[in-house]
Length: 343
Image (tube, rainbow, N blue to C red; front, side):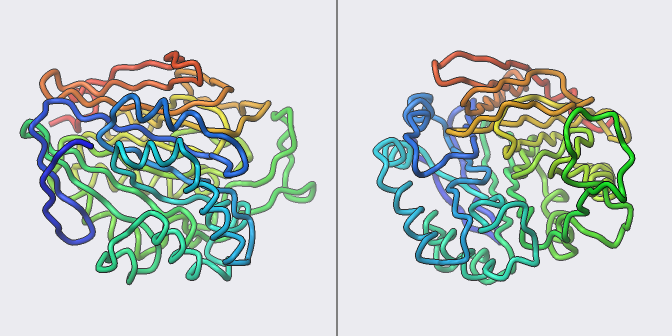
């Protein structure tokens, strides 16, 4: 494992690296009942950190013992043990490890399951994540005088219920499949919750050159009738306005959930192009890639993981999605200059 110095501060870890590049691997949707050989592929890349973006196990239970047993299945995998010994693991959750499909703040076991999550991912006993509501957190790394901030959101603990779609409230016939959810136009309905929004503002006000925001569900896509940020369009817009208000340069989103990979870009109503790199799943795949007006690369429908390589000398963020054969199936270079608020 790479050596670095750790300095603890409020709700984050500040680490100083002597290198000039910083590599972030990430992925989501790994079922504990299946082999996960991609962990070995990820470890072979020698990333500085690996980020679990949710559905890290498929719990789907109200029984704590059942969820513990599923975490134990993940822990017992040789490929996971290999990953754990070779890189630092960071994590947030999505619905299946939260406990219930598409669940939000109404889920009754969220407090108990939060402890199981934090225990499994070796969260320090003194961590503020253990005393606050929710599991949102941030980390900062200094690399070659550039500050790389990683922000992990909690898209479950505070989220209001989704607005279900049915024949009575939907007349949209443009989609070729049955829609699950409609957008909320009641602006009192929240995706992150007031507490987390207030915290996020303080994180975005901190000094950083690159800001990687991990969201379990997709941020940068257009509405598709499934679970994602566009179900709360006012919250999606609030994020773009908060980035502009705080003058937070260098924001890039990473996300999971959908069982395929793609690269999306928001340009409307944003202070600069906002990219969202989706990697899903480590074991799970799906037959349908939904329409996405913001898609610029993909979709890739096989098992995959994501890589971000931040070159602090060239001031470039190199994006990759890699498949189970080690091939790069999505590639993009994003210059630091491109993701800056214009003076």
